[in-house]
Image (cartoon, rainbow, N blue to C red):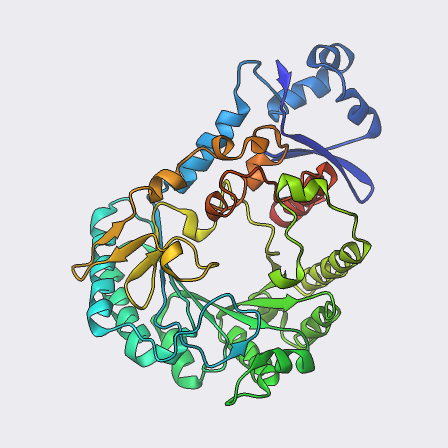
Length: 447
């Protein structure tokens, strides 16, 4: 027998917690047992048989011949190949009525999905339903650009067809719309409400009122902050969910708390439909993930303070009964990014197809093309790249204690760091343990 390489011990309030990242098991232990964990399994068994048996039962001690790295890889590939769900993202347009300075997408003024491509998209949905007999969940997303610019002309025809094609099937259907929120009028909200789908909107704030209005520039909505706050309140009062994505940088991190306070007077049930997601914008975050960059990294006290302030708002959001989903809390092994699945596609307004919506919709990132008959012609290497074993691509993952959670990040990491050793936690063991602690707090631990 051997100790699992994915055992992590961390302090939580007045307790020490033993957690296994592969089997998602946790156990409260005292200092004596923590010290005993440093010994071999044989010594643990001889000194404390009861503890040894508990470690066996919880898979903290495993068979000597178990290849745990291979077990993680197999779990990751099994989940990425899941045929019971499908994730379809549609960009009705890459035009937008806002002018956010940090946006990574190139606005395409006047762009709109044509009627032929709308029909091709509907045909694609029909083929997904016909060729996936084990399908249990169909997740539909609208992105852009600002998708609501083309609500009547593009979104409604697709949504009407989606409802018609799936209404008699035993499939759980979800709808998520990523929008700046300015066009969420009563007409749009009422239509979406009547669809009867499990629906969530992602609406972004760029700080408290003054900072938000300066950042999210729009001629039609120069004071959009107050409009969006009221819109979020209306949506959650109607039983709809809102991912409250709050972008911040080092200069306005204190705005996070002010935004949360906008919802203190809302009923608890309404607040439970808010998913709070604070995100430090990438232009304000040093990219220190490659080995070379991490080796030259200098401790940044200011960054640590910013992270601490952001974490404080997470705790406050939870105290308000909100759901919390920090951007770095994604379990890339068990719950990968929606675009990473084999059963996923992101269709752009012009028929180009992608596997990631966090990069520019351009030729370099294109993975396929939607044909008029509803077929997608993928690049030959797309699925090979998705299903390639991560430890072959990035050897440091092989010895990482949080590989069963991080998984080396999303599939896009294959392209971003191809041929370069990297670590999303800066090759820092203390950062990895802190990530495990936060992951466990968010997902399962009730102490």
